[in-house]
Amino acid sequence: MARASMSLDDLVQQLRQVHGDALRAAVLYGSAASGEQVVGHSDFNVLVIVSSIDVPQMRSLGQTMRAWQEAGNPPVLVLTEQEWLRSADIFPMEYADILERHRLLHGTVSLSDLAVDPHYLRLQTEQEAMGKLLRLRRGVMVAGTDAARQTDLLRSSFSALLVIFRAVLRLHGVKPERDATRVIQDAAARCGFDAAPFMSVSALVRGTSFANGEAESVLAGYVRGMDVLVEYLDQFTPPTAAPAVNSPVQS
Image (cartoon, rainbow, N blue to C red; front, side, top):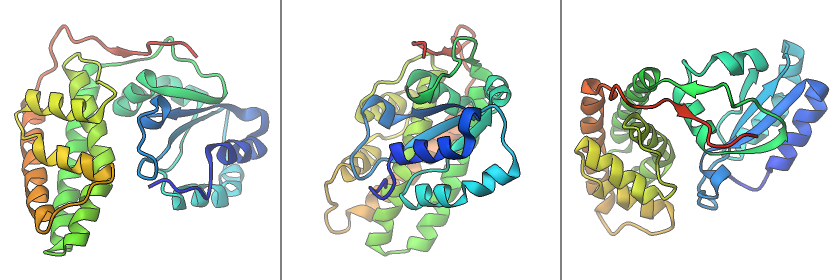
């Protein structure tokens, strides 16, 4: 959950102070970049591209990065220019999201020569889905029968699952819709899992509350859905005609 204690402008200002001319670009990507974020519940994903970075600079950003993460945001992704141009094969989910949904906060970023190969995207999508399933299982065990903990587990996991669902759709050569409910429905239809528990969590994230005992049943369906998704991805082969993901715009 993003909080107001540190803004995007604050982050960029402090990055500029530390990196100076070495800061090539700061890019917001994901739901917040396309206006889909849920205020108070969505975090800000930021890519930072620098000409170079050393240990003293990293240390200088310690307080900034701690404050950013304490505000509920994921760690900033920091790459050198050369790393940015050659890492689409190892971060295909992140690159696909950046190429499709991004907003430049500072500087310029090269996008024209980048594409995401469906083969690499499938591997990371399966890995991320399996990792999420394992974390869900641990979370279920820790939560036990505590409805508040069950609800927190569902709410906190939802954003990451949407990223996985969008990657699934891209594997089918489909550009994901902006609306989260459409993404859930499309992914469920293609992979064969029940969309209803995920739709319930989508509503939860947007401010609804569970009825007494509902969290337990939704969580059970949520885990079953992830079981089906992981099995589906393990057997999935991207269509030979599936195009690579490219940027639709130039920045």
